[in-house]
Image 1 (cartoon, rainbow, N blue to C red):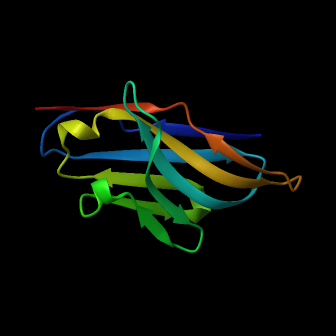
Image 2: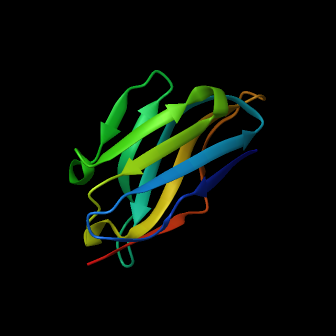
Length: 120
């Protein structure tokens, strides 16, 4: 089993910044991809950004130029720096990790989610 613990959400005004963190722990052999998704009320969960163990990054068009994803492989931790926040960024943000366990099992894990609210 792998556990993901997120932190860093909160309430911020339009134009403000927040930094999310997600630390993975457990029976981890390796983590191929880590990323952030978000889900607003009444909407489907959508990709925000992903980063591979080799540093390849993918962003949703809606956040390009404003959000920065980074990763510390030694700590199995992924970060999301969110700048120039807009009210439409308000969502629950979920961390995701595509992990290979020590047993060899590959599985996608989700964090519990952290609320980000941007006031206008």
